[in-house]
Image: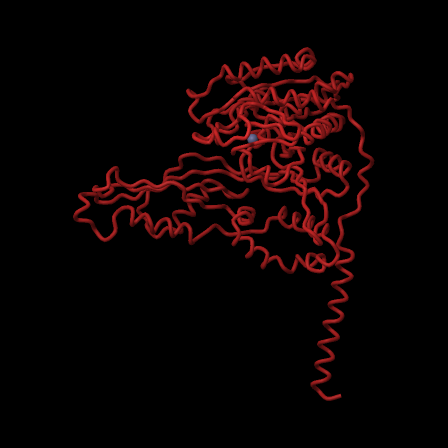
Length: 493
Ligand SMILES: [Zn+2]
């Protein structure tokens, strides 16, 4: 054999071995086999749960940033409805109102040596955007049930969840169940008012903290059960997102001071022109991207569940990480999973068309990754903007949460119940993009999970906060069954 042939055969041989190795690796690259046990049956009165949800939606408990605009009589009505709909809860549990309308229910357990568990929900909903009322197929506060969907504001965010928890507890009481641990139901009044300084959830947490209460675990809104079907790659799976952390939220106003004067004699760059450079600097210098462990786990969970030919690629994700990270920064819905985002949203110049601005300002909304603080955001602005005379003013801020562990008792219960209900599920711990009330409980709890056990498609989820928010009727009863099982399991030792 000549030299060339030897080299060619060696290369081909090496490629053959590599391909063979990949094929073997791909064949073995499957979800870890764990025995989650058999699902237990739970009694749920589906019709009654649906009626409760419809009625709850029909009471417009809308929150606004300015408290003066909130109609608290609607919250009183909502409380009266809860009393009427859930008589055993109101007979057995201790109820307390903190702030104006936030609710604490305590179901006393038989063991006071164990930390209590808490199920969270918020009572408030966002308003209907002005001018869009007519776009709704059924009135936004009708709670109309057409047999396929229950319509209205709060159907997904999150009267469904609040009523689901209440129905679960009421049914457990009817069945004579008694928890070992105390079970707290904690329903804030103003979650939708982001980073509210004196919010309901903060006050509930403070009340519990003052009493020396430490919670074993918290379950709040966040992920859902999302059916996924990518033909030939991912067949009939359910992606179950369990939020183990949430991003921070910061609004910052950046102001540039200029000379002003009459617009007939303008300088080359007015205050707004100077500000344009600030905006460009911010957009051109994004925060550093990082593939955090939860993203790697997410890809590995999905990758292992793919069909065999697709696994030839997904089994090599470890090597593809730099490429993956780069790719993700180019797609907005993926970029937010790997870095703190920068969104320039509002701008202000002078008050009249023929006046040069003496001050020009923009508002930038940042969503921080866990580990990035509000101060880090301010430092980042200072670093990347060439204009060193800018004024930076933090308008509103909420730090990102910590990560909750995925090996806790509560997480394992959630995972077990999900896998029992559908062995085809992919349970994926993930990062919640929006805010929830759950993060306020960090001072009294380490195991905080954000998961709503409702099976809802992605297009339907997009209606949250929008027109035609609605929930599939068939998603209601299984969620109540989940809450029942969760309470049975999590309230035990
Ligand atoms: Zn919500």
